[in-house]
Length: 150
Image (cartoon, rainbow, N blue to C red):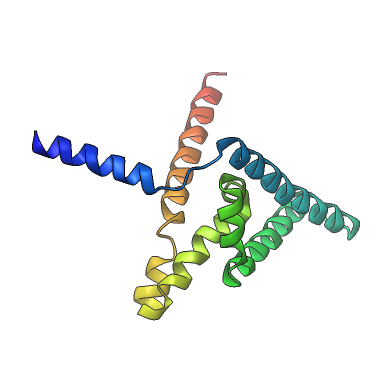
């Protein structure tokens, strides 16, 4: 029973010292920053279309440019400030994925190339890649089985 009282006291202390968030403002920031990132991506896509790219090459090149921008902004320390301001609006686009790979790599680079940079690079993004691959295989198998019965 003593632990329960201690836990309640700790939770009360944490709630008192934690900064209060304005959820409506956070949602608005996430919405417009995420939308702005998507507008930048669409602008890049239009520029590449004008250069004559199309189809999968257009989509791949646009993604690579956005990943490069996200990685560069992370390396310069700008993307972290965007993330604090926009929250989920900066995490969801592909630039957020680039940030989730580059941030741990930068943090652990002092531990060396193998044990630091290479081993820790996918600490955050690794589960996303694994579960994305597994779900993609699962959906592919479902479509394959459905195709057998047609």
